[in-house]
Image 1 (cartoon, one colour):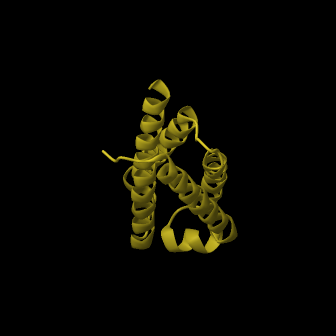
Image 2 (cartoon, rainbow, N blue to C red):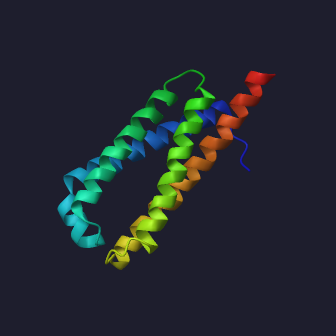
Image 3 (cartoon, rainbow, N blue to C red):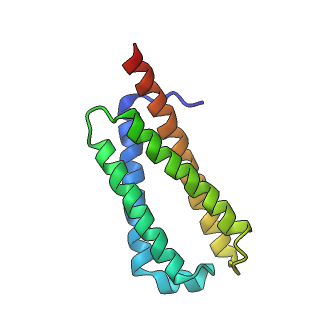
Length: 133
């Protein structure tokens, strides 16, 4: 398990917010071309963008706190874990005709989100231990 300091947690949260904003904007601006390249329907990309904007907003709000609240960080981490599960379903269970690029894209972003979620979860546990002490 990771040992995540409060300052590292805030950097992870800012990274989550920035990467979510970038992904959401690309899904909106490039939904058509991304759909053709990946095999993911454009409307799914746009819905994903809305979900990601919500998560990115929460991550930015948490990162802006001098001490991110553990409950909020855990909520974000659980949402990220759910995203990873949904990505696995998209890659292997949705029955979409994903291209090789599409499969790689889904798996790469799922691994990235999994790492962010693990770091956030570890950081929330540290914050909880400090609050209890």
